[in-house]
View 1: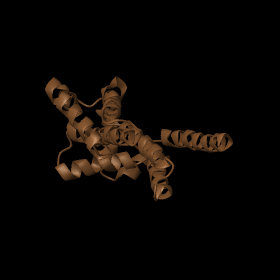
View 2: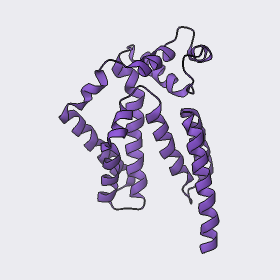
View 3: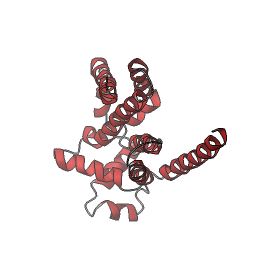
Length: 194
């Protein structure tokens, strides 16, 4: 079974479980304070950058742009639409984890790993928040995948993923620093062992 099929199976299982349990109702609950700020910045009449310069919120603009795009595409500014970019980013993270695990593990282990992430309460909480954390988690996973050795075009992929990581949230710079130090340490110590 291909790695992408494994990721899609894990994602389908998560979606079916969410629908069966009725947990999708959390997407329609009223927005809380930080989510209201997200909505206000994303749909600011004078634009996202003006709202950020005014001190409304200091997160990087890509997440707000995705929220605005979701609103423009649907024509709705409901809590569900404001949370949609996080749901999509979390779904892509589960898919990416399943695909990544399948490159080294069995189908069963890969699906189990992806479902473990999808079932984690903190991950679920971020997946349904109108805040940039699900995008940040996805960018971390994408950057880690890009840093895996032996990929054709890997440097370009890793560079693009690193830019997304740094732009997704200000925590992204810290995560990118930790990943860079880890890659450097791995390279140094693996050369000593070989």
